[in-house]
Image (tube, one colour):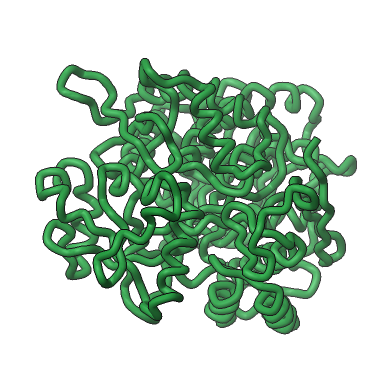
Length: 541
C-alpha cells in the first residue's frame, strides 16, 4: 500500500491519528515503519520526504559487525570521544543493539558496499580503532539508507503530510502530549495553520545547524524540535556541545548556507590534513593524527589558521589516486570539481563548520522526554550517547536503535492515553515572532562568538546581541517561526556555553582551556518557563 499523501487543507483544519511522527530522516522513517502495527501513524515532514539530513550523510553507519570487533570495543571508542560525560547505559544500549539494527536495515533493502567475496566493505573513521563503518555508494550512505526506507514506506499503511512546519505541542488537560500544530505550505497547496490530534507525538526533526553561518546541515535544520520542546516545558541537555566538522569545503570568505562536507572517511582512507606549506600539523598533536576525534582535528585546524593568519587549511588526498576517488568518494569528487577543485591533482581547501548537535531534547533509553506522551529520536534528542562529542558515524546508528526502542515503548503510552482533548496553545510564543530578516544576524552572532573557539567575553557579547534581537516582533508566518526557533535555540546554546567554564569535547573555552572533572563532570539541563530559559547542573553519578 502506497502511503497516503495528504494535501494541505484550509486554515483551521484538524487531523486525528494515534501516533504523529515529525521528521523523515532515519529516526522518523524507522519510527513510523516500526509503529504502524500499533495504531494509525501520520508522518509529517518539513519539506519533501527525502530532504532531511540523513540523505546527506556520507561516511556511513558504525556497528561492531566485523569478526575482530566487539560491542565493548565500540563502547570504549564512544566513551573516549564523549570525554567523560556519555551515559554509559545509553552507549551500551547503542553498541549492543546496533549490529542487529543494521542487519534489519539491510533486510529492508539497504545495499551497503561489499568486498569481492560478498562481505560488508567496512572502513574506519576518526576515533575508531576498528574497521566498523558500513557505507554505500562509496560516500553516498545516507542517500542509500533514505532510499531503502522510503521504498519500505511505500508498502506501509502510513499517512504523510509534506511541506509542513511543526509549530507547537498540543497538550490535554493532564499535561500529556496530545498532538501538534502545523503550518502547511507548498507550491500548489492552499496551506494554513491547523492541528494534528494524536495520543503520542514523536519528534525526529533533526538538527539545528542553521543557527550558524557555515554548516553542513540542509536549510530545513532550524532547530524546530528543540524550540517546540522548550516552549512545551520539556527538558533539554548538553546544548553547548555543537560538533563542528573539521573538513568542510571552503568556498571563500563570505560563503553562507549549507556547504559541502568532506567525509571523515577520506581521512580514514589515508588523506592528510596540511597547511599552506604542506606540513601535516596534526602529527604530534594527537596519537591518531588526522584520525583523532573530530573536536581535536577541528581545534587543530582552527589553531593553525590563527597561527598562520590563513583563511583555510587543506586536505591532501592526491596520493590516494583517481581510482580510489572514483570508487570510494564519487560524490565528494563531483562536488569538489563542481567548485573548481580536482582532489586527484590538488589539495582541497577546508574549514570547520557546524555539523552535529550532541545535545537536544532530553530522553530516557526509550526516547521518552519529560513531557508524558512526547518522544524524541535522532539528532533532536539527547539520549546521552554522545556526551561532549559524537563519535563518527554513531548518529545514524543512534536514530536506528532508539527509533526501535520508541516503537517498543509506545504501546504502553497508547494504552493509558485516551481520546485526545487537546488544548490549543497560544498562536505566538512569549515575546512574539521575529522578523525573518534577522536570520543572517543571528547566524553571524553565533559564528563569530559561539563556534569552535569560545570565551567569556565573546559569549557575553553574543548573549547581549541576541537579547536585543528578541525585542522585534512581526506577524506569524513560516519564515518568522523559523527565525524565532533559531533565536530560541541560539539563546539556549549561549546560556549553556557561558555556564560551562571548562573545555570539554566540542565545547572549547579559551579562558578555561582545561577539562575540569571536579566541577563539570555532568550535564547542564535546560528548561523554559514564561519565555525565560534557565539551566541546572546535574553531576554524573
